[in-house]
Amino acid sequence: MRELSELNDGDDPAWPGLQEEFATTSVPLKVLPGDPEQGRSCLSQLQVSVESYLGALALHSGGLILDGGWLRVFGGSTMTGADALPSLAQVNCFPAAFDPGWRPADGLIVAQDILGGVFALNGHDAAKAGRPGTPGQVIYFAPDSLEWQALEMGYGTWLTWLLTGRLEQFYGGLRWPGWRAEVRVLSPAQGIAFYPFLWSDEAHANLAATTRRPVPVMELLRMNADFCQQLGVNSPGFLGSV
Picture 1 (cartoon, one colour):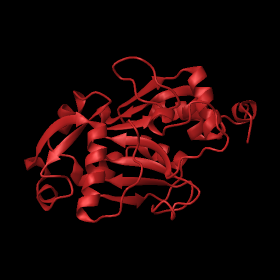
Picture 2 (spheres, helix red, strand yellow; picture 1 turned 90 degrees about the horizontal axis):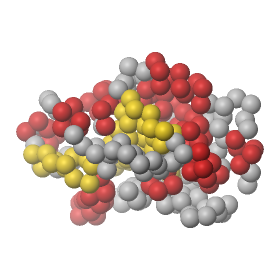
Picture 3 (cartoon, one colour; picture 1 turned 180 degrees about the vertical axis):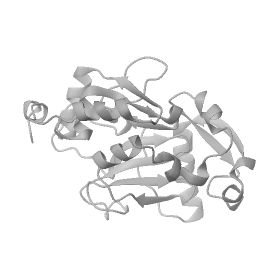
Picture 4 (tube, helix red, strand yellow; picture 1 turned 90 degrees about the vertical axis):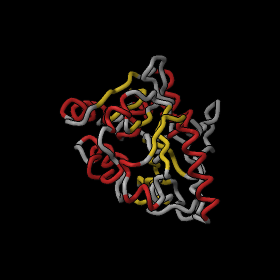
């Protein structure tokens, strides 16, 4: 176990470089303010250094809102206000007090999108958790296939990848005419439910023809887990608590 002073006193903190990426990105972005006390608590439980992008975001930020609200990346604290996101601690059910023996069972949930898609950071035994990829690699639960996908990159590379405008290509056929207007009115706790469902042949053939409505993100996550069970697909495991 490393003490907070060791985690917080790196010779090469990542936050200044990350701020430069925020300032130069072409992706619509909101950087939410962090709370120092919450950030330090999150950093301690994560046991990551401020020299990493994960540690820097955990210490200094309440999260990121990208592409007009399409994607929400969780930070180390949560603040009040219309744009407030839950913290990494809330999403991942951190213990109430620091526990040096605690680790996220299936991996760390780091972001969610309005489709009910989830980005996670693999834990030390991804295979045991039934997830693809290697330890420390970012993976994505895709609601249009109900499967996890390995992205073959670590957290820092993934965050830079997001900020260099790769979302349009990544989401490809999952965006429809007028999506920005529909996403813009959502709260950070909401996503969009589709009918026919995103994994259906009908949605794959013509996403624009689906019926869509705002729902709580937690409803989407529970619904996707239920679909996996009903369709005999491998359980996605933990997708986040809020």
